[in-house]
Structure formats: structure tokens, C-alpha cells
Amino acid sequence: MKTIIEPFRIKTVEYVKTTTQEEREEILKKAYYNTFLIPAEDVLIDLLTDSGTSAMSAKQWAAVMDGDESYAGSKSYFKFEKITKKIFGFKHIIPVHQGRAAERILFTMILSDIDSDGRFINAGKGKFIPSNNHFDTTRANIEFNGAEAVDLVIEEGKHPEVIHPFKGNMDIEKLKAFIKEKGAKNIPVCMITVTNNTGGGQPVSMENIRMISKICNENKIPFFIDACRFAENAYFIKIREKGYENKSILEICNEMFSYADGCTMSAKKDAFANIGGFLAINNDEWYVNSKNLLIITEGYETYGGLSGRDMEAIAQGLDEILDESYLHYRIYSTKYLGEKLLANNIPIIQPTGGHAIYVDAKNFLPHIPPEQFPGQALSVELYRYGGIRAVEIGSVMFARYDKDGKMIPADMELVRLAIPRRVYTQSHIDYVAEIFCEINKNKNKIKGVKIIEEPKFLRHFTAKFAPVD
Ligand SMILES: *Cc1c(COP(=O)(O)O)cnc(C)c1O
Image (cartoon, rainbow, N blue to C red; front, top):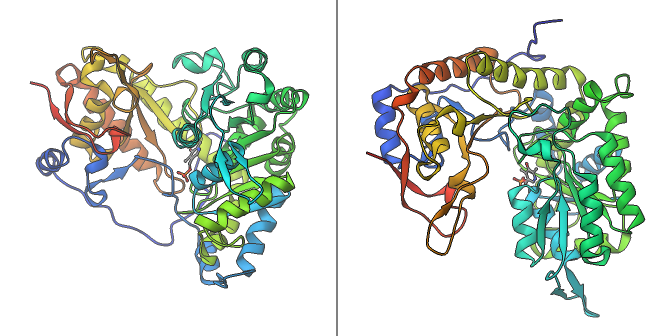
């Protein structure tokens, strides 16, 4: 079948506001040309993130009404626990309010010495945690605990134009050499992110997961999966990896997680929920220690910072995400936008990943130097011409400065168009492509931006910009 249609129909609608270009000029000025500072109400198509922005199904909303808000032993928790065990197969499931809370608990625990009174004493210094690419909150939680987060993605994963079926894979030789160099005792856990968000939503193959697991086993290093987009990854395995074409998504997920000792999960991604997550662990001692941390800051073990109705929505969402017709639509509708952009000579990361299209702004706007932030300039144009909100993933986010204050640019200057799940129709996506064509016509006139005010940390969220003259 050639046409990829949405495998759902619309039952409730949410109106979006159209604005004129004149109004948007004013809004941009007021927001200091930072898309994070634009009120969401003034956005026509919001591609800022796919996190927590999914449209819930009728069954999820029905489940919300059925939420059991009992403090301990809620029926909704047991439902949530049952489906997570069915998909992920781990022994212990700890609910948390979102992915980064699972990361905080995991890394605080494994990067601490625990004294006889159960107190945690940080021991992160001199420890290393490898992954393909750590997501930014994962990295922050590792570094906040004193350890070093190390990216070991394969070389192909670093080049936007290079085609590879599993560009999110970890470089196995590099991992072996890394363990040899640093010593297994200094690597308390090894991670892999599926799909690799930071690297363009690129998948990781089953073979790669199996090999990492084998190496970790040989070196007695626990292996954890950052599982946020596990179902999208499983679908890529099904369509691209030999031997999996006739397996169900559930079977592929079961195999993927059978190689690991635990996982962290944000339910704001592949669980169609607006909030939530969990930490899953096989090791009994780690489970007890994690629960202690959970109860101090998140909540009791059968809700962990979530309401009963949240756990209901997640449980139902996890059941729905395994649906192959949905995943088929998801992966091919992302590809549809990518192909439209490529057909109009808009350079993007190839092949297209699961949840987003990444436009190569350095290549698209070669007349704007990194010091004038081509990615930021392009995201401003998208809003100016089309009321579309995207996010820069380039030097605004990642540049560093040398001791003389000279900027060391990021490796890539990208604009991410993240696609919320089940939210936009094909005509919305066609519109996005049309706006790109409009921008393309006059792209040589687009000017860069400069920073006029910025905070010390995570500046992309709140920095203020102005157009360069
Ligand atoms: C979103 C995300 C996280 C963090 O989850 P939150 O729910 O936003 O805290 C961790 N890893 C990856 C790969 C993510 O995409």
C-alpha cells in the first residue's frame, strides 16, 4: 500500500489560532526571537517537542475516569505494573513523574556509597558512564553526581548525509577499548538510548544491543536501556533487521529488554501520556535503595509522584503503542515530511528517524556563520512565515567558549521538527513543507541573530536574541 493514512479518526478537536504575519513580527519581538518564549496559544503548528504532547485516545480518557487514587496499593498501579512487566520483563517497576526522575534515582544510587544508616555519600568522581549518545537530562544527572557521561555512537551517526540503517548503534570496538582504558570497576553502568534522540531519532539494532550486553556481561558491568522510544525502535528493527520481519512488536521488545538489567522510561514519549515514567530494575538490592530515594522525594512506591489516573493513561498507552498499524503510520509519516523537504532541496539528517526531522541549517543557510546562529535564524523564519514552532539544536544549545571568550561552535547546526503523536494530519505536514519552500525562495536574505542576554546554564530556554543588522 502506497498511501499512509492515519489509523484513527478524530473525536475531539482542539482549535488552533491563526495569526497574521504582522502579528507574528510583534510576537517575535516580544519573545526576543526565542521560540521557547512564544506563548503556545500564538503557535499554529507546534513542533517544539514530541514529549508530553501526544493526543490521548478515547480509551485512555476512559481509563483516566477509572483511576484509583488510593494512597497505597492502588488498582491503577497494578494495572501499570502488569503491562510494564509484560513488555519490558524486568522484576521491579518504580513509577516516577517523568524520565529524568528515574535518571536521578538511578544515578544517585549507583554513584554513591551507602553507609550503615542507609545514607548516600556521593562517590561519582572518577566514574564513567558510556552510551551511544546520552540525552541532555541523562548527561546532566550523571554529571551532577560527579561522573562523566561518554558518547560512543558509531562514526556514521555523526554525519547528517551518511545513510546507515542503524545510525544509533554504539561503536563496539570503542566500547571494548574504553572498558580496557578506564577499567570495568570505574564503569558502574553502561547505557544505550533507543531510539537515539540526540543523534536524530536514529534506531539501534538488536545485534548491537546483544553485543553490548555480551561485553557488559563479560566485564560484570550492568546494562541499562533509555527506553523512551522503545516501540519506534522495535518497529525499525522489524523493517530493517534480518530475522525480525515476522516477529510481533511485543516479541521484539521482549528480546530487546531481555539483554538488559533495567531501563529508564519517559511515558511522555512512547506511552502516549502527558506525564509519567518509570525505573525498572532486576537487582533486588538496587531496588530497595531506589525505593528509599523514591519515597523521600517522589512518593510512595505504588504511585511515585503520579496520580492513579496518570498510571491508567500510561497503562492503556503502552498497550496501544504496540499496534503495528500505528507504528507503520508513525515512521512513514515522519519519512513523508523528510521526503517532501528533500524534494525541495532542504538538507536534513538522513535517513529520517522516528520522532522528528532534523534540518541541517548550516548547509541550508551557508551565508550565516555559526556565531550568528543559523539554526536559531531558521527557527525564527519558520514562525515568522508560518506560525510554526521548532527548536534549534546547534550552537545556541551546545557551543562552548575558550578562555578568550571565542565561541567553539557545536558540531552541527540543526533545527528539529519534532512530531507530536497522533496530533497533526497530513495537511498540517504538507503546510510545513510549503512554508519551507517559501523560505527557500528568499533564503539568501535571511539574517543571523545575536545573543543580547543569557543565563549561565541551559541558555537555549531563556536567552534573548536580536536580529543582526
Ligand atoms: C525525554 C527524554 C528523557 C527525559 O525524560 P523526561 O520525561 O523529559 O524527563 C530521557 N531520555 C531521552 C532519550 C528522552 O528523549
